[in-house]
Length: 92
Image 1 (cartoon, rainbow, N blue to C red):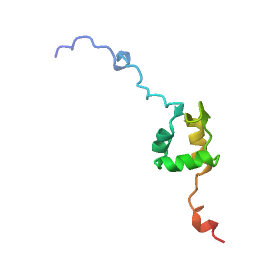
Image 2 (image 1 turned 180 degrees about the vertical axis):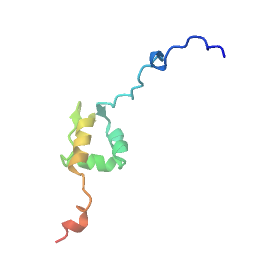
Image 3 (image 1 turned 120 degrees about the vertical axis):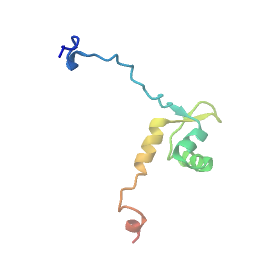
């Protein structure tokens, strides 16, 4: 039986690598509407959180405000409720 043509060992075969696909970067500043969409709440809730000082904002002018994504994440972390720490455990 004839020998097949010379083949490179499997370990010597190289595959052209493709550049890694990176997700689009998260925006740094969000409008109030974008922050509401991100949290899946109404715009009036975001407005109330801002007025009460619970959600910090960057104010460019009286009516132009933006929410930093890091502040949005920090707010969510502060509001995180672990399993078993719900309303039942807060009742006296």
